[in-house]
Image 1: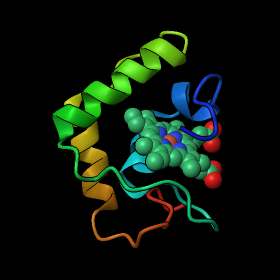
Image 2: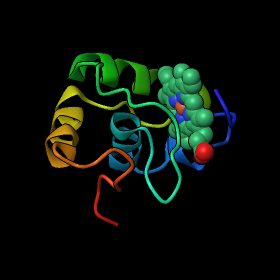
Image 3: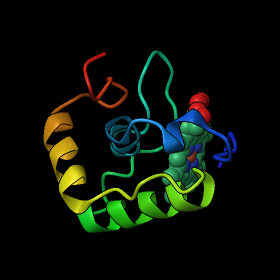
Length: 86
Ligand code: HEM
């Protein structure tokens, strides 16, 4: 992964922003990484809980319900759009 996830502010930061980043492939003015919206809610929760544990200094796990809720919010957003409307 580029850039490194270690010490990335995304990992241990806002759960919703991290989930949104993964579902949309990032957001902002530049194309970032690929979309991971093919993962179901349980898969996404497992992957993100793992990286937060390993690279996020033991940040809290991400629940399936949280992923489902953010997915609902970003549904219909254009690729590259800010999932949380910032
Ligand atoms: C478990 C899988 C993955 C997770 C959790 C993940 C997570 C992230 C996160 C949180 C960032 C933002 C890092 C930062 O800006 O501090 C990021 C950036 C990035 N990821 Fe991933 N990623 C994954 C897989 C991949 C894969 C498979 C690729 C490429 C094939 C990839 C390519 C990139 C690129 C190119 C960026 C930089 C985007 C930019 O800022 O321009 N990622 N990733």
